[in-house]
Image (cartoon, rainbow, N blue to C red):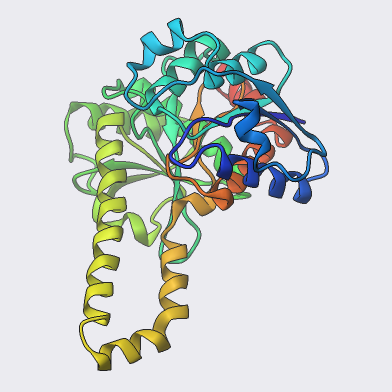
Length: 327
């Protein structure tokens, strides 16, 4: 299996992309990686070229670029070339830590949308207290959504949770302002009815935002505007709590001694809350897997994104979604 990686996207490119790729090919004998970007800069960090190749390009998409315009004008950008490799059938999937909007545009215009899916959804796996995690979609591919879009999100999320995360009959919840069936706006009320009637998913009803980290469902669906707000709230809250803990534990000698004793436990909690441990955010609804890794991804995050992508390809997530939606 071949995975195309935009080696120039992200805050730490290309070093972490290269290190993550080397770690992945060492762990997975069936994976080949194609790195797109500046060959000289990539080679500075590439110690092992076994099953890793480079396609040179000087062009890249910046975080400040307007997404659609950049994809259409920068045809030789590392992200666009990686997506084109998938569209041409020369790679099975692609990964980027770069401009999220541009990757979504490249996914739509270059890789192409799957038949039967009206709008793709961006979906990370977020952590829960029990360590199981849950798939949240959409977190920003589309700010607005119709009820039928949420049903499609539920189907795609369910297939992913079952095939990649190994969850039998995954529970699907609808993010809402209350658990009662009558709660919500017109979108959630109509979506509730569609989800309840669907035989393709195991719908358990409404889920409140305050309960998300308790793991009430394996897949939770919402519109992209709400999902993005929830994602950033969880991320910001986690960062804020750890910042307050750090300040408190370093405030005096007594607390510093306690911090030394608690360091392993605190590190474990921090890792548990790090959703990059689950991989990147998958852009569901396209003809092939496209994965958005976090902009600040380190080598371990890139490795996890490659692992996740490998699982999506080997478990035929995209064909299964197409078959399920087409029924």
